[in-house]
Length: 284
Ligand code: FE
Ligand code: FE
Ligand code: ZN
Image 1 (cartoon, rainbow, N blue to C red):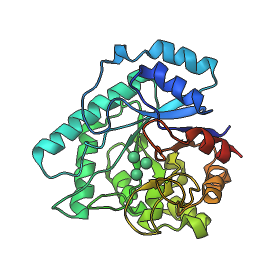
Image 2: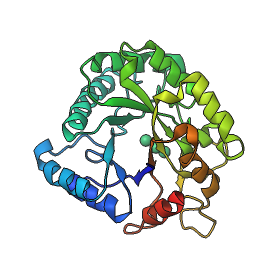
Image 3: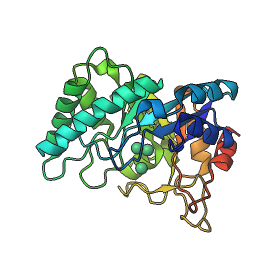
């Protein structure tokens, strides 16, 4: 069955998140355990987990995935940032397990003043200190656009991290369509080659979640600005360079069936998003 949904808010707990997802016609969803930019978190027992799970099972919501906050930077050479990243990742892993989700999505990190090889090795070091054989959720490293000093804009970076960690079976991948397009992978004209490259370098068995976003920028722009699916220039957020037809082919591609497909497309204003319309369009 096609599993499709969007990012939803945790501000009213898992119950609120599930209700929001249901209002979009989703059967899965993604949440942050609190604000993506900070480490302030409510205690687990304030998240209405029992009510949320009950609502989910009654409304055909299969499961959900969790996204770790952006402030976790395992590639940092600065001791205080690296320590915070490890500590908070450990807490997010426990929260994800307690909430009953199998997947925790993580941006690999940014090496800032160091270099790519330093960043990759630092991420490996951090993951090795946090992950052990008893870690419950699979940590999904997200493919990045390559802005600034981000690690993970080439499939090779992610493959190298997986090959160097102590528990590669605990690591998977979240592929973001906006990010790989901005990184230079031509999913518009040659989707099958991109998927086959992913398979050769990382292995499609590692792919668990796909973030389905349009892009406001051209192939290889290294920007990371999401567009609404198939948006034209009259959309207030701007036109999409990827296009609805490409996203449709990704979601229905036989090689990546049964993954979680999650929208992170822009809101038009504080109250309006297009998740419901986008989900309906992508279902076909
Ligand atoms: Fe992300
Ligand atoms: Fe993403
Ligand atoms: Zn992004």
